[in-house]
Length: 143
Image 1 (cartoon, one colour):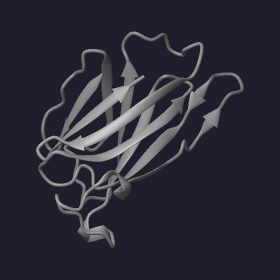
Image 2 (tube, helix red, strand yellow; image 1 turned 120 degrees about the horizontal axis):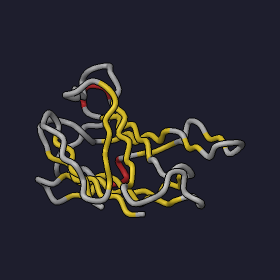
Image 3 (spheres, rainbow, N blue to C red; image 1 turned 90 degrees about the vertical axis):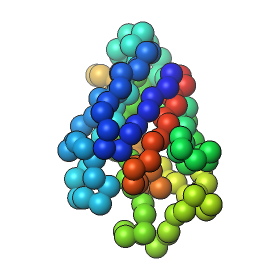
Image 4 (cartoon, rainbow, N blue to C red; image 1 turned 180 degrees about the horizontal axis):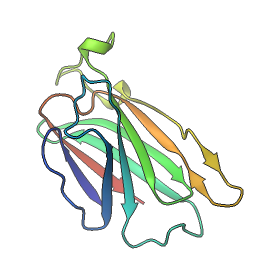
């Protein structure tokens, strides 16, 4: 399952996955508003009988480099992620095409997990050189 995020551009539907965006659109990485990307598989019953493991990979499609790769366990099948751009103006790090690699990104979460009556997984966060400038980013999800 593949997705594509264009900063400042329209939204494209996926073949096997819906992506919902919460927050102010178009996304402004220099602004104080937050954006949440929710990925919902089209062919999986919600909630699933067993937890799903998502492999998430983010890359810059215009330059051949990997920005982020991580596995997430998710009980409710809806993967919620908050991308937090890190760039020169709000970070001690300065990223350029020659210095970005997957170790420049960090992730944490989920913020909420409830296994009592309804299996639910909260939001995960990704902080790194993502959604910066007018680049096109590739988001790949595998279950």
